[in-house]
Amino acid sequence: MEHMDWRPSVNPWMVALSVMLSTFMVVLDSSVANVALPHIAGNLSASTDESTWVLTSYLVSNAIMLPVSGWVARRIGRKRLLMISILVFTAASLLCGMALDMPMLILARILQGVGGGGMQPLSQSILLESFPPHQHGKAMAAYGMGIVVAPVIGPTLGGWITDSYSWRWIFYINLPVGMIALLMASVYIEDPPYLRHALQGTIDFLGFGLMALWLGTLQLVLDKGQEADWFSAGWIRWTTAVSIFALAGFVLREWICKDPIVQLRVLAERNFGIGTLIAGLYGFTLYGVTAILPLFLQTVLGYPALDSGLAVSPRGIGSILSMFIVGMLVNKIDSRVLLTFGFALFAYSTILLSKINLDIAMASVVWPNVLNGFAGGFIFVPLTTITMSRLRKEQIGNAAGIYNLIRNIGGSIGIATVTTMLVRGSQTHQNYLASHLTSENLSLQNALLGLQAQLQTSGSSSSVASMRALGLLYKGIQQQASVLAYADNFRLMAMLSLVCIPLALLLHKPAHHSRANSKTNKST
Image (cartoon, rainbow, N blue to C red; front, top):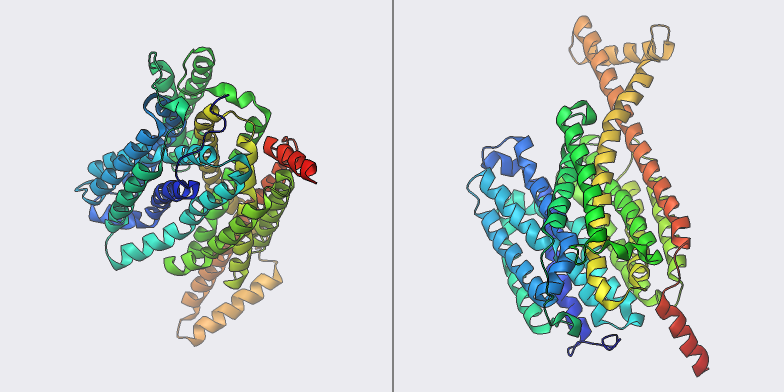
């Protein structure tokens, strides 16, 4: 086709910097608000349950916009949509910071999700079209630094801003970044020729409505399911049924529609279909690990929020290092080999985390985190490039929206799964451990007598010391049961990582690899 060799008139690395800045802002803001929820609830006179809608409302609107971005870009142009998204996100950030009550904040967060939802797939498609195929790996490595590092520093930065200033500043900091990103987008971003003319035709309102209903209800179930004890609650069962029927209707509608909101037929391409499945599984494992590790450090080991963030943040060091390395290797080594190494290392680092105990030192958490982050670069970059490698350029925008949506849904399912397994697993392990505490257990009796003696020497009476000793013993059982439940979750994440390896081997080699190799052979 005549547009296959199109390149932007500016340096593509300036394009990369422009889109990475806006995407970094969005990804950072999706995690920076988590630690500020108690402060937000207290300041706006809301309950803890009400404050969680600050996160849920953003995730729902963000999820709806992800797959729609490709369709809207074909209508109004990719550059125009990116600039509108940045403007909406930045303005919504200002409204979030100025919120007078919880309904105003939730409405502003919905607008933030609408603005932020289109930026990730737009950024990916812009990068993949601005760089020649043999530089896609380097472009994705640069882009990946923002995607991988932002969630790592987000909680730590959010905690520091909230403690030192006010929760409102976690939104206000987006204003200068958003203005710079908007200026750079207007200067450096260009639309390819096939997007310079708006498509004609009617809007697929039915497809959009079914998609919004499916994603909205799904996110609601995943976010609130554990609080409602899942399917024991009637509204969870009904909401799940609505989500399933809406999904079936959406798939049918998009398959038969002449100009669908989301072009699902692209999933029939082997690399994209398998790669998107792997992205969903990787989102499950990545978000699962990053969600429960800070929780373990704070709730079980008693780390302050700042120390917990510092223990987890070295993941970013590993990610940045691997992005540099993979950017140089992705065109020299088969992407499937890089993926195999990445998932194997991710599984190994997660197995190391499963060896946690109540006496674990911070160093025992930091090193697996560095390895975990290092593995991320060997997964994110080759997976993105090989998944998109056999698509036509005009398909990339739509495909990027689907790819990011499935990865995010995988992450939401991962977080919902591990939080549920933590609660259920702790109860199971606690029952098992308690069943061994009988009056015939001499070790138990000796331990209780030792505790009672220590408490009596500190001034407690015999009866009080006996009750306090039993209380300390029960607390120890609860802590041990929690540790075992966390270890179970880390082992599950490791096994799912290994499942991705045979799937990665089913992928075809990227088309540009074979072309590059043939050129090398001819030159020699």
